[in-house]
Image 1 (cartoon, helix red, strand yellow):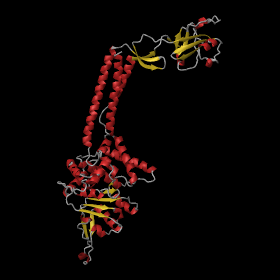
Image 2 (image 1 turned 30 degrees about the horizontal axis):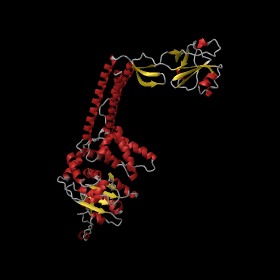
Image 3 (image 1 turned 135 degrees about the vertical axis):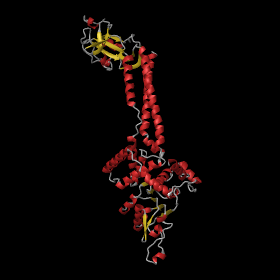
Image 4 (image 1 turned 90 degrees about the vertical axis):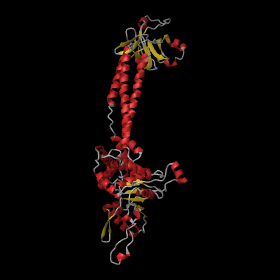
Length: 541
C-alpha cells in the first residue's frame, strides 16, 4: 500500500513547485474521507491542487466553482428541471454539479449565501442531497475549499469546523523555483495515473482504518498537546477552540496515516498531522506547530542504550587515575605546617652593618605564610620561635620574596616612598631577597600550576599505566558499540518512521532524542580521548 501511495504522490507532485506538502495532505484527506481547507491569496495553485488529487480516483467526476455573493443554489447544485416543475416537482438537474461529483473544489467558499451553505452542511455531514422528494446519496469523497480569509461570521463556524485538514498555501519562496516557474514549468501539464483508487477500495480502506490501533505513545502525545493548548488558552485573549468532534476526526486521520504507510498502529511521526488540524486562525498555526513539535521532541524514542552506566564507569576510572598516577603537592623545598597553615621556611642572610641590637639571632630562621603570596602588599612573617617578627616585613614581587629588616620598630608608613635601593638603605637596616628553589625529588612535573606554590605531579607507579590503558580500551569499546547501536537504530527508525504524507524534517523531529543520544555518545568518546592523553602524558614522562 505504501509503495502504491508513494507512486501516486510522485505523479501528483510532478512539475509543481513547493506544493508537495499540500498535495500529500490533500490526498490523505481524500483517501480518508476528510475535507480540506486551503488558505491563501489568489494565484497560488489552490484549485490546481484539488484538480490533481481528483485524478487519483476512479469516476473522475470533478466539480469546481468560484463563489460570489450573488451565487445561487443553481450554480452549485444544478438548475431546476422545468419538465418536473410543471408537475409541481422541485427537482434539480444534478449531473455535472456538486451532488454528482466525486471530488469538488469550492473557491471563496465563505462568500456563499446561507441557502447554499445550509445545503452544503447536509452534503458534508450526511453525504446526502435532497432533490425534490428524492434523497440522493452523493458520491463525494472529499470537498476541497479555499479562501483568502478566515470566516468571522458565527454562522459559518459549523461549516468551517467540517474541514479537518487546514493548509496555509503561500506564494513560491525559493528563487530557483520561482525562476523555473517564470521559465515555464510543467505545473499545467496533464498527468495520468494508471492505478486509480476505486470506490470499492475506498470502502475497504474505511473499514480497515478502523482496525488500526492508536499507540500508547500517540495517546501520551495527544494528551500532552491538549494540556499545552489549554495552558495557552488560559493566557491568550484569543483561545484556540477545538471541538470533541475535531479531536475524534484528527485521531482517525492519524490512523489513516498509519494505514496507508503500511502499519497497523500509529507512531509519533503521525502526530505531526495535528499541526494541520488544530488551528483556527492564521496566528494559531505557529502556536500549534510549536506545541506539537515540542511534545514530539520531549517524548522521544528510547533506543535502549544505557549511557549513564558507561559514564559512571568512565568517571570512576578517571578518579582512580588521578588518585594513583597524579597527586598535588608544593613544588618548593622547606614547606612546613604551623597551626594548620602552610609556611615557607627561610634562612635569610641579613647584613647588620647598622644594626645596633643584639636580637638578630631571632631572625636567623623565618617563616612566611604561603596564603599571603597573592597579596601584593607587605605582610608579617614569623621569627625563629614562630612568633610575629616585630622588625621584619615581606613582600612577593617578580617571582621572589623581598624581606626587610626595619630601621624604625613597626614603622611602615613610608613603604610607598620606596622606589629604589637608595630608598631601601635610607629606611631599613637591611634588605634580603629570596627566590624559592623547586624541589628535585619529583619524578615529573606537568605544566598545570595551582596558585603560586602548588602543581599537579605524576607518580612513579609506571606499572599501573598498563592496567589503566586496558580499562580505557574496554570503555572505548563499549562506547563504540553503543554508537554503532545508536546509528543502526536510527537507520532502522528512519525507514520505519518514513511517512509518504509528511516531510523529511517532520520525521527528523521524531528522531531528535535519537540524534541527541548519538551526540552524547560521541562526546563521551571525545572525553575518553582526553583521559587517554592524560595516561599517555604519564607514560612519556
